[in-house]
Image 1 (cartoon, rainbow, N blue to C red):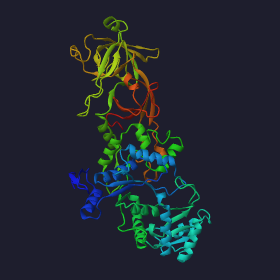
Image 2: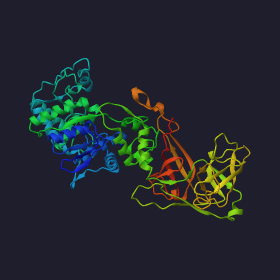
Image 3: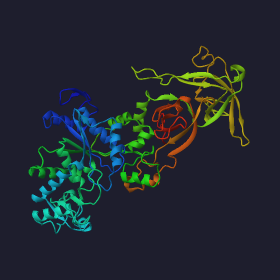
Image 4: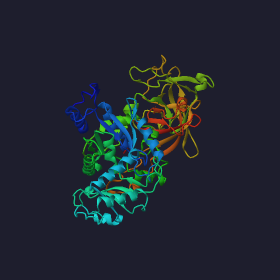
Amino acid sequence: MSDANKTSADGAAVEHKTSNFLRAIIERDLAQGTCTSIRTRFPPEPNGYLHIGHAKSICLNFGLARDYGGVCHMRFDDTNPEKEEKEYVDSILDAVQWLGFGWESDGQSHLYYASDYFDFMYRAAEALIEHGHAYVDEQTPEAMRANRGDFVHPGKDSPFRSRTPVENLARFREMRDGQHADGSMVLRAKIDMASPNINLRDPAIYRIRRATHHNTGDRWCIYPMYTFAHPIEDALERITHSLCTLEFEDQRPFYDWLLERLIEADMLQAPAPRQYEFARLNLTYVITSKRKLAQLVNEGHVSGWDDPRMPTIVGLRRRGYTPEALQLFAERIGVTKADSWIDYSTLDIALREDLENKAHRGMAVLDPVQLVLTNWDAVMGAGHLEPCSLPALPHPPEGQPVPAARQFVMGREVWIEREDFEEVAPKGYKRLFPGNKVRLKGGYVVECTGCEKDADGRITAVLATVVPDTKSGTTGADAVKVKAAITWVSVADSVAAEVRLYDRLFTDPQPDAGGKDFKASLNPASIRTITAYVEPSLAQAVPDTKFQFERFGYFVADRRDHAPSRPVFNKITGLKDGWK
């Protein structure tokens, strides 16, 4: 398939992204009339914060529905009340909307919860029992596990498997009515204990759990298993393409079996939804296990779920990644059936492309040393501050207004990077050393005359003279030729700022692969906090505003801690991949 424009179900022209096997399936189904429009769903469990793997799934499910004129349902699979909280529900909804998607279509909300269907699921379970397809098992969990068998040995029938539907129905209603202890019995589907697919060896579909549910309170003390609830939800919502990651491939036979039995029992309508699997996102230097991410938070290795080093969506957002960059990343990595590893630099490339013509420029000095212009007062006047300016955005997007230039001043003392001076210049060095001239970007040409040191020999100030009539943007700007221009900020109007220099959280590209202890490869240099000096305009930035600090890379005003009285910036990424 090509990337050419296609036609949606309603006949409107839509531009499709790069083709993949899922798009081919959808286009085939629409062409053959298997469905007249598509419905997908994004079904997270509200038991934690979403991570970048979920971002891929969000972009895939909502993106396909958008591109083919369909609908994507936002659905919470809230079948495990012990681990689920309203906090997670709210964070997930916020993440989906931040990524640029919504669940409204033609004035109708498509926000759903598995718990909305608990009554139907219970009736479906009774229908399975009545038709001889389910039974209540009272074996201990250990006995059930032992009798399940393994990939070599078939399972053994439960001694309770031969109960009559009447007996099972009575026992199941006792479970519902709270007459039995948690874990004392489960409802199992009756399929095939000798099946080579262990997932078909009479899987549990209901268990007893006395736990308050965030949505239904204490109404229920039995809850459906995810593998039972999910296909029912898909069918009730008339999902056409149920997209799952590859770990659910072995569950597809049960998905199909359950829907077939419920259609036979007149509980559901044909045709049943179809499940399709794709490879999950494996990103180097990242872990996406919710359990392991929770360990990092709970053991204090990071400051929280929104720590900018975390691969959670809230962490990526606070770090400064944009929704557009994540969408571009998801599009570029594509969708396949085969597991593979994506290099983290692919994400940063997408971010740089998004920010290049959006992020306003600014100068910051991260490792400051003072440059003193010893002839400034004589040439420019004592205490004089020269107004200077530079473009806020050198190449604004076509058709958009040109933002106002950045305004700052130059005086007798300025801050420069310590690395921009060498007392004895190495070969090829073009910045400040005695006798050499450079331009202070947006300001004047200066000539280095030497430096001052403290008692320990550390340089405390660089000395230079200003060359008159060489200010950038004036007729004399080209009168003196220089080989370098360096960034700087004025002592007079610069603002001290906290800058957090983030790097990758792990030093191992596959930190938890093969059963490795992921915490053993935590990067001790994943964060370094410094005091820098920044242009005055940067200090006034609104939290979450992205900038390009000239020569250093992209930074964001921290969305939680930044304020004009205490500027805080997070490094998002460099101007190029600098990871070694």
